[in-house]
Amino acid sequence: MKKYQSDMVVVDNVMVGPCATLLTLQYPGTLPDMVAGQFAELQVPSAKVLLRRPISIHAIDRDKNLVEFIIQIVGEGTQSLASAKTGDVINVLLPLGNGFGYRSTHVSRPLLIGGGVGVAPLLFLGQDFAEHGIKPTFLFGGRTENLILRKDEFMKYGDLFMTTEDGSAGEKGFVTNHSLLLDNEQFDRIYACGPTPMLKAVARWAMEHEIACEVSLEHKMACGIGACLCCVEDTADQGNVCVCKEGPVFTIDRLKWFN
Image (cartoon, rainbow, N blue to C red; front, side):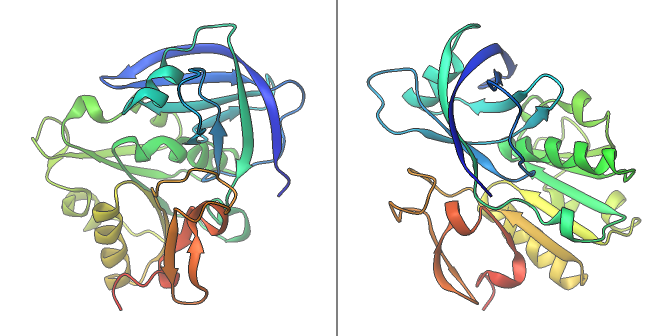
């Protein structure tokens, strides 16, 4: 898929969680084709930060040529992006990587699992499913309820279930502990994004229940095009590959997590 580098204008930038903002950028022209699970490299407004920041594509609006990103504030670079004002210009390289394979796979009962800021690419995915007449089920986990972002927006497209480690919302525990959902519903494919321990638990559960599963890895990605070699993952079919170029989405059979 062709990559585009362009200056994009900040339309809005609002807090959506204790340490997260929703950054909306307008593309100068017709949005290029992109799929859920892909990401962009955003140039940081601060002159002190040289490297771009890889951010998942959260949602798009093709009518208005808008792209949304959730910016989790963890350091100087993301703090600078989270502080961008309406009218500011941010240079963006997109779309990068390979997204979820839903457009080439027949799916009727998708389960979308997210942990923390890993819910970000799942809104785009949920929107795409809904546009094709498929109602997804979302299962999100977090340490506490206020860290599960944009719940109302996700519920526009499908049913939302939650787990929290402190029991403040949904079932107490981790996503794979949500017995009310997982023991009573049938799914034909799982799509997941979040911290690696969560992804491994989801992958193991999917394998045990013989459900096809794709996971989006949250590796550190400096360049986004496979040049810096800082995001390598060992795979069963190709050996060491760059997550930013070959991923970030992988089917779990390609990963050597349980070998």
